Length: 389
Image (cartoon, rainbow, N blue to C red; front, side, top):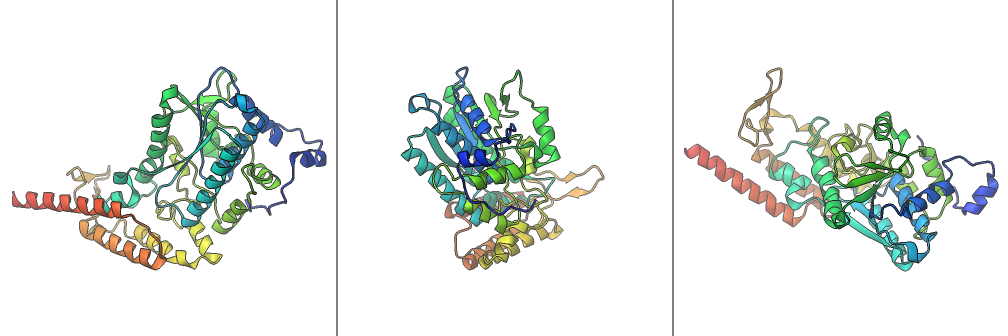
């Protein structure tokens, strides 16, 4: 879909008077009312966790929750709402900048309006970052059949947040901006988990004690853009920067992923903006889109990603043995190579550090570098010990 031109924000009263005949269940007033009623449901008082990627769908969900809370008297705002975004530490730089800006506005708006909102950011554990696994341990670049990055960089950090900070309530409600019309796969997934007994909640497939609430599940993509364009952001300002981000990126956002069943949405062949290192996509159209509109300093990042994808299956850069010490073969008898050799890892790191200098901002942390060198030292000592036996 081509991104629509953003209309001038108007208030709901003006929108209703301009379209008095519009009484569809997708009316924004109805959605906000539904969120309000769900929030005030006296049968459960579990905290809400909004998976916030900063993209159009999660922004609309946060927008709706914000509006719903503003329509509730302060004495009844007893349920805590956590707006949680995940930083894989290899996110597209412009996406991170946008995410930082909007979450800061949400946090400031919530504080000034005394709303029970906590804004949080999750990160992968230091020993599970992209660079430590790729360069330190030699994991081959992710592809469609070996997408080790999604679980370690996305699922585990956000799942850990829910388990650690919300477990005291015995359960939590994950509020997601998933919609039926995103794809046939998404529609089948949603229909498979139809709400039970008229409830708006469905049990989460992987998180014990967590339930999923999808307040905008029936909206179309056009609906989402129309609503965002027609309303000011309740935390202040408007959604202009979001519209511009999509125009420049020539794609969509990588969604919040909380289970392996949702992993196919991460790094799709359609190229959605997410990790700048993503080798799952054939071509990073989104980052190229940023370059095409004048962000030429991203060119070294694209070149590095393309090179990393290209060298993945070169036999001379891969070890014979897997990390478990075994030699593996597929069903046809073809040898399955092991991790990158240490020499290949050194080449990758040297190239990355050159790109970092050229780009002019940090792409890998000192803590990651220290751990990478530790992995190399340990592995070399093990190899030396085996050769001496």
